[in-house]
Image (tube, rainbow, N blue to C red; front, top):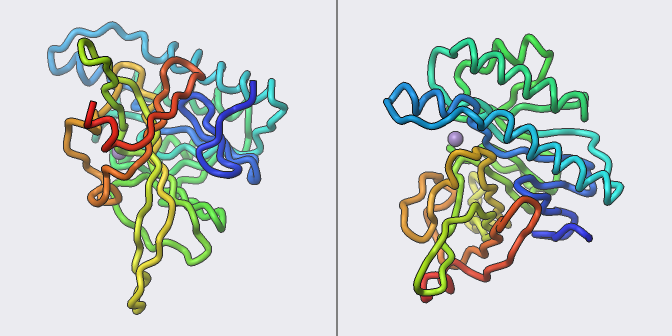
Length: 256
Ligand SMILES: [Mn+2]
């Protein structure tokens, strides 16, 4: 089995992306501690998520190994942990455990700061990890997606997380919501320039296994990158672990 691509040299590996040229694996929003936050609100969900995430990522490493694709760098796209403000003991422990687990696979690891990551600094320091606002790999620019950055002139593709896209796919009688990747375009206007620059924009689903995410067909989207032309975005559904289905454009899904 060869891994599907979303763009040349960018492979879809279950809920992650692999940049072939840079031998880099991008891990989307994990939201460790999400169930704990739900529990605090009185919503009872079992706390299985942490082990499920580890198993899922192990499966991703295995898929890459089978294809002989080495991981030389891991980029976490932000929102590794869920809770704003004070971090609980369990969340602290699990976040460290998760980072250690990833670092065993790739010592070179970069954390992008998400909007939930106000307390990630001390954790990053304890493991000597770089905590940054964005990652510039020349033709690929990676940021969390909660705010617009100055996009370097070399960038042709922007990759973001934050939005947790999902799509309801149905046969007219029943429908089910699946996590999905989105691919569309984003126009940036460099400072002082009159003309806009068109870039490819890839949005990653979350690795939060408690919820599928935001249904892009029904709900309003948050990211400032996703306020225009949403209907023209292509949908890549993650049907089950490692299985990606291409569903054309959001507007085609709306007509069903
Ligand atoms: Mn976020």
